[in-house]
Amino acid sequence: MHAVSWEQLCHPRKEGGVGLRPLLEIREASALKLSWRFISGGSLWAAWMHSRYVKHGNFWTCTPDNNHYVTFKTVLRHRRVLKSAIRRVMKDGSGTDLWRDPWIDRSSLLDIRGSPTHQEDMRGLTCSRIIRDGEWRPELYRFTAELGGSIMSTIIDPALPADRWIWEPTGASSGTGEFQFRSCYNLIRRTFPLSSDYEFVWCKGLARKMQLCVYKLLLGRLLTRDRLSSFGVPVPDPKCVLCCLEPESMKHIFFECTLAWQIWSEQSRVLGVCASEKCIGDIISVLRDCRGRGQDWFRTARVRLAASVWHVWRERNRRIFEELVTPPVGILHNIEFDVNAMENG
Picture 1 (cartoon, rainbow, N blue to C red):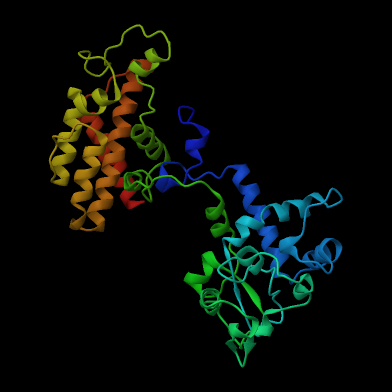
Picture 2 (cartoon, one colour; picture 1 turned 90 degrees about the vertical axis):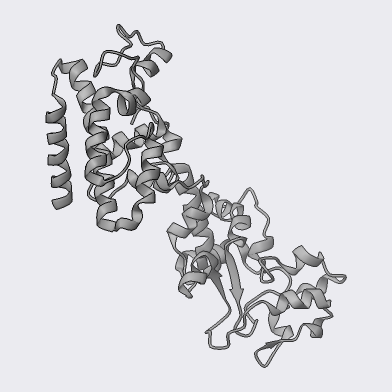
């Protein structure tokens, strides 16, 4: 995998990588997890950190200080991202700071309206001031109609034991709102365009060596002679070692060479598809269009594609490095053997 960048390898499989997770993103997700543990409470660590650094103040308006422990500074640094992933659900509002907690569409009253006219108005005020009999009463605190509409969107659930935070990425699907590290990581990480081509790489039961060979072919990272020459590596003979007629390139080896053409013609005959495609993307498109033939056929098609690519590449390497030649009939026999082994394994 030396021909593929580390950044590319760290993409999810559906986005063109192999699913590795970079340590920087893991660190950020872990820090966000600490922030969640701090606001959700329920642990000795959260209680100690709150009594040590927040005391009678508010976590959301706390200012980092040089005397703060580095872990608490990390927790504070992730407040903005944390706000984007949480939602407040009320029991009676007694556990939610009216002005400073981000309970209105992930924003606080301070964010929306700024500081109140009289600073003492903020002291000890909770959302219970505008909740009566399990319903919102925003008119009790002189809120505008527009702000009152936003307040009404916050859920009140009298069955809860207390006001609580919901982890939004899981709250919509599971209804529990419990924290999940996977959803946290997906919130932190960079995303890349999805591609259905990679389902032909990561087929269940497919040999790893074949998966990686097709993967590098899709990315254009196989070290053919034309690529080696472009890197400044001396290449005695640039011609294709399989046919000795044309310069070697990925397109030629796998789709234009006479040997490769015999392989694809046989696989197309077995699968019942056209063999006129000239690149891996075209072949994948043809196979995907025939997906309606059933899951068993589609899986067989993916296995045959990967086995054919790998055996053509293997034959190329054997002729260069071992000076051994296998006739097309032998290569087809090896492909059938591997296909049967993977399908029955």
